[in-house]
Length: 121
Image (cartoon, rainbow, N blue to C red; front, side, top):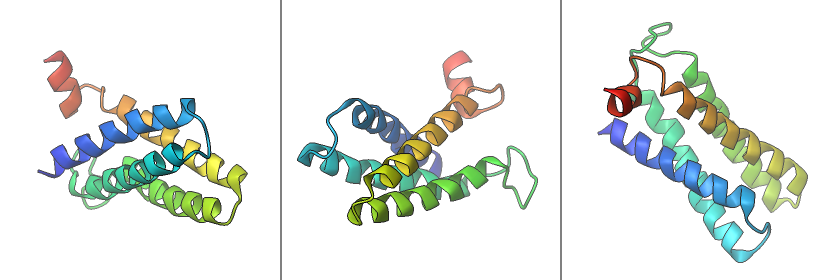
């Protein structure tokens, strides 16, 4: 179940993230979609802690889980920055988190990973 929650949230984070990058900044739509994106990023990061075993370096966790911790930091800093009016910092942390989820998505295409098996058999 955690796998499907993780994949669903990650797909939304990618789709909403692309829309956020390409769309008008500061609009009501940007803010509303941004909240769904932040939630999806949080769910993606937290659900990753139930996905273990690929590379058992630390109790089943791998270096990719460090990215999950970083995404949680990025979400908090980005939201706090936007609320404080520091849009430059908000953008830096939000875009950084987005590229992190893109990197993780590319990593799922490695042989032996579930997404790789679904796509390539």
